[in-house]
Image (cartoon, rainbow, N blue to C red; front, side, top):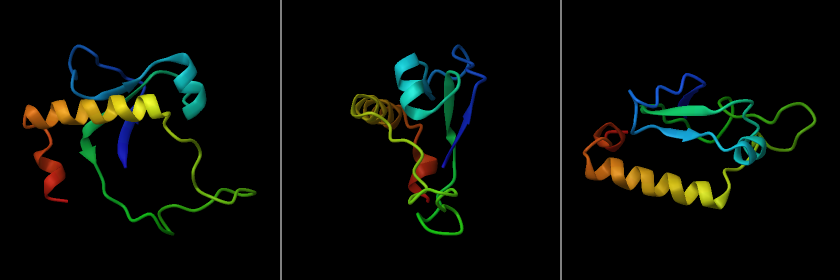
Length: 92
């Protein structure tokens, strides 16, 4: 899990992941541009009680990040790795 917020802080947090494109926000069901704070990560097992299907649904998945955004995220994480910003992820 990664903390998401509408407080973009683009100048202060240049190494976080932001979804701002309107079409991508619609696909991901984000009402506004959202910054994901990649320094605040919590590892959870993909199982109940952490993730359960909403009433009337078969799965807890609400949306899937489009392939182009997944590629952008992978590039972003690789860049963070080069800068040494992912050390906190290695201890999890």
